[in-house]
Length: 456
Image 1 (spheres, one colour):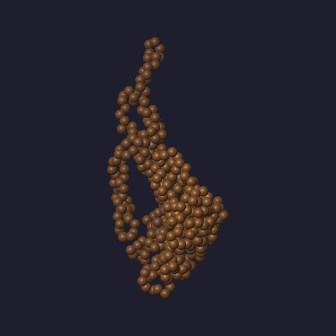
Image 2 (tube, one colour):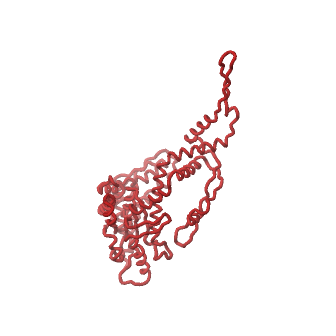
Image 3 (spheres, rainbow, N blue to C red):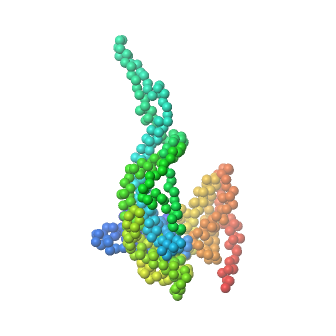
């Protein structure tokens, strides 16, 4: 984050997301402001809170992807939640506080993975030695292989007998074989920890681990299993890594990152907006969810199993289509906590063409790589991609506007026959998608007229 300016952040987002420049600028500035805040004196830093962002736009235009990619750029703890999953005080649904607990879990997992990478080499070396020792115990070396006798004639009357123990040589040779993976498919008997049983305590809430509930009061049950050396290595590497890292320090750093760098993306916030004039029915519950969310966005302290976490400096990004409800239908207090508002644009045929050709993870590239497994060299002509983009725009206009997700529907229909027939039993075959082929396959679908738009 320190090395990336807002322009560089936008350039990184441009690799995966087409258009939506205003939204990209807003999140880039918000991200840079975090770095700027971290460089201020502590007395000033405490008073500066993030400027939360509210994105308004139809589905499939990049709202979620912008937030997700933003978190990946700086490896920040990121949680995406659906506002519709929450109900007032957790009745028949999840309580709002669970989003903070999920963020802490994500943050600690992120820190733990980083620490694991730091000790991975040492942990792997220790794991290989443990496997070497187990393999040595299962082998039964004969006396001739364990020792060797050598006679050295010192003079005419003296002969020196040298008995050499080959155990060390065998051990070193076996360790090298284990490191090279020669014994990966050999079976060994190891003691493994049984997976904890999960139980549902409250309907709608995530399942709980009994051992976690009692804070490790009960010892973990173990049993003997025959597994491959490759599987045993993975288990041993995890055990050795846990032994090498300080979990208390991991938890402390995880909470700090969740507080200072965490990002919570609240999707479908328009679904809990309350239309003006209704004071009963389900709208009461919707307003209740808004009021439950409000304290966390304003800043409060939440108790988690890892310790207390302050939500004052977490960046909240809310998003919704707002087709029926308006932003103004949210309660005023919640509106005030999202001072930065950006409206995302509908995607045009030009945008669809760019989505098909420019991103690093373009859908055309993904389909080509998938079919390459079955010896299909898939290629698209420029005119074919332009026709696909035109059809996507037309379909979104005539039917429900689902944004870039329309391309997945069109691409699956277009490549259905090729994907079904490809089986990898033939030499590499070149398949070119032309404009004529696109019109032939997708033409009948496009010609269907949606008369429901004109039914009163």
